[in-house]
Structures are given as C-alpha cells and as structure tokens.
Image (cartoon, rainbow, N blue to C red; front, side):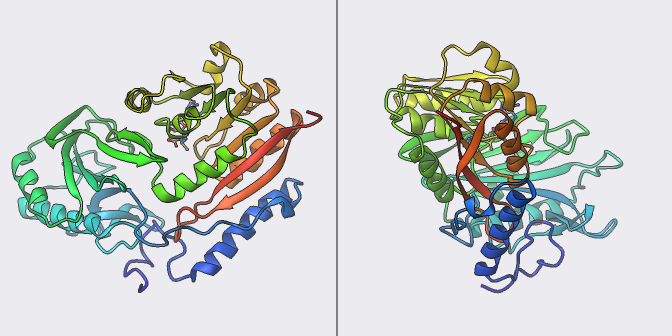
Length: 385
Ligand SMILES: C[S@@+](CC[C@H](N)C(=O)[O-])C[C@H]1O[C@@H](n2cnc3c(N)ncnc32)[C@H](O)[C@@H]1O
C-alpha cells in the first residue's frame, strides 16, 4: 500500500512510511527502555507480538468537522499535527475499512451542499461537531452517529444519503447526537435514533456484545481477542476461582473468564458500559458474573467477595497509586495487568514492587500498527507465595 496522502499533516499515525518490521523494533525498544529506566531487567520483555492486520483494522473512528485553513472549505477528518484547531480531510485512511472513507465522503458532501457550518471550538458557535463510525467486525454491522450542536439538521435527508451510499457493511443504525456543551469530548444532550438500532453487535471469544454509541470497546477486535486469550491463559487454575476484573469496560474479559471461573466481579466507572455488560452477560447466559459501577478506588472498599486473582485493564492514565495499593493489599498470588500505555504501566509496576509484587512475565503487543500505541500483558506475582 502507498503512503497515506495526508501522512505529513494528519495527527493520527506516527509511523506512516516506516516499514512494519522497523515499527515493531522501535516499539519493543521503547518498552525495554522504560523497563530499564525504572530499574527492571529489560530482558524480561518478550519479543513484541505483531498485529494480525497491519491495515484496515480499526472498528471505530471519531472524525471532527472543521477547516484546514481559517474560514476555508468545510473538512471532515483528523486534527492536524500540532495544530489542534485545524482539521484535515481523512477520506483515504488506511487503518479503517473502505466503508468508513465512503461514509465520510458522503457525509461531507451532504453537509457542504447544505451549507452547514462547523462548530468553532474557540467561538463556541456553528452546527457540525463529529462523525463517529463504529462497526461489528464479526457481524458486519455499521453504526453511524453524527454529532451536532442544537440547530436545524436535515435528519431524514441525511439518513437517505447514508442508506444510498454503497457499503460492504449493513448500516444497522443512524443516530443524531445533539451536544450543547463546550467540552472537547462529546457530552450528549440527546441521542436520536433516526434509523434502525441505537447499538451494534459484536462477537468476541464466542460471546455476543451489544455496543452502545459511546461505550468503550477495543478498537482492533481480532488483536484484542488474542490479547485477552493470552492474558487469561496466564491465570493458574482459573476453574472455581473468584476473579476481580477491574476497569472492565463492557465486560469482555469478565465474561470470557466467567465461562471458566467460579465467579467474576467486574468494576467499571461508565454506567452505560456497565449496563451493556449486564445485558450481554444475561444474553450470553452467564450467571456467575456481577458488574459494579463506580471508581475502582472507592468500589474496592465494599466488594461482595474476596478475590483469588485480580485482572486489571486500566485506561491510558494507568492505576491511581492509592487504588494500586488497595489492589496489592488483597495479597493474591497473581495479578494480571493488561496495559494500553507502557509508561503508566511501568510507574504502576514500581508501586507494585513496593507492595511485594514482581513482574514475572512481560509481553508487548502491536495492536495498532502505524500509530505509537502499544498494549502489554504483565503477570505480577506475589513474592514468597
Ligand atoms: C482500557 S479500558 C478496559 C476495557 C475492558 N477491559 C474491555 O475490554 O472492554 C479501561 C476502562 O476503565 C474505565 N475506567 C477509567 N477509570 C476508571 C476508574 N477510576 N474506575 C473504574 N473504571 C474506570 C474506562 O471507562 C474504560 O472502560
């Protein structure tokens, strides 16, 4: 595949044009460097696992409406490198399926024809904010969600434009989210289902998941599936055990573990994700998993059962030092740490070491080629246990 035509402008990919082998080498080197800087043995790091698909792997993309030059034509795409207020059209992106590029084009053309303005982040005026596309890799469903400020938006005409765009996926839903906030993240005031369903379906490790428009879900499904399987395989004798799955999102790993463990308790701060997790667990016929909504730091004070093993999959910011201390204080023999940010992972490993846990297995995964993201699985073992 040729280098992306906007590689020099787009803030999305950092490794465009870099041969894949070199990307892997640099990522593995970066992780080993972080280990050394925190006085861990860098040889603990196993070779990085390459991605099953180097291109077209993403299942979600958040595109921003804006302009590339001040008062220039409307664009829809990614923020420009180092220029937060500029947006470059991203209709030839190589890490999303072709359908995303087609729907981006159709949406942009429709909005330009209508003469709609984009929301201006400094002036806080204008209509169009984001286009969020999500797809079920195993179900071939695609969910379209256009986010605007309050104002006139031709919803029926937009649905017709989307449904008449030739796509390989089935359009399972078209949503219009209205957002009246001044925040950079979407804060829905209203979510209107204009066509079909408000969710899409995904299948991971033979379990079905119903994913809402704003729920977290791993963006590279086959790669995430491999990551989860490998992480669960590290748990010694999971059968009959009570497992905590902290930062559980929509409960993917929770449910995969529940098919084997005695009981699994998932903790997640986003209510929509917890509700989705409960719905899918019921649908998957799993009665031995429970989901608690709240901040791990607080929820850990009132858990209904003690754990035999703990799995954590925190956001990029890592685990709050106080929460890390509480997690270690259970004294379980094994803690499996799944990380999406090696920097905060290593900081947490330093805290875990102070609490008597040593990393005994450390493997990075390249689940997001072309970008600088790295996933890692670490097995922490309690010393003298
Ligand atoms: C990397 S995701 C893990 C998702 C999950 N393992 C999955 O596969 O769907 C991290 C999750 O932690 C949640 N989160 C962030 N801070 C949290 C906190 N303080 N307490 C509980 N959950 C939190 C986020 O909402 C997000 O769903």
